[in-house]
Image (tube, rainbow, N blue to C red; front, side, top):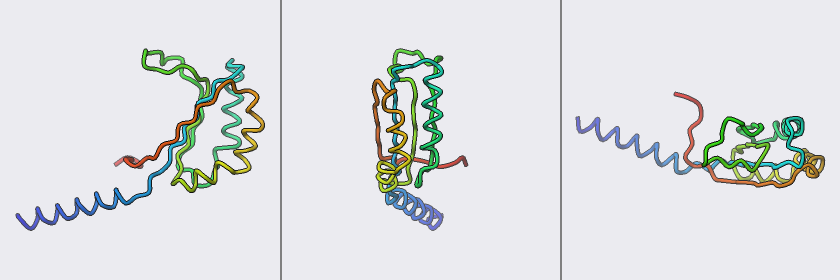
Length: 132
């Protein structure tokens, strides 16, 4: 019984050590407030996100979407119209994205439509991928 416990403890510690040694993925969340926040204006920006940003090298996750009208609790920040969510495999991939020609083209073609842009970047260390 003691050997079984010791083996389980060693396996657990090895798993924790490997999880801590992982480089963090980078979450890049961008919230756009549009000058024209009509459904058409929102859809146009989502389409531009899909066109220019959905196939970036080093991307683990991409999504772009409009603010949800059903989410109006006191805690919901409603000062935006379109959200872009990217998760990169690491900071190096994020940094390449920042200067990528498609990303810069997206900015150049759409920046005049933005009233305000907020960017939230984070290191994602405690993550799981897929379902068990």
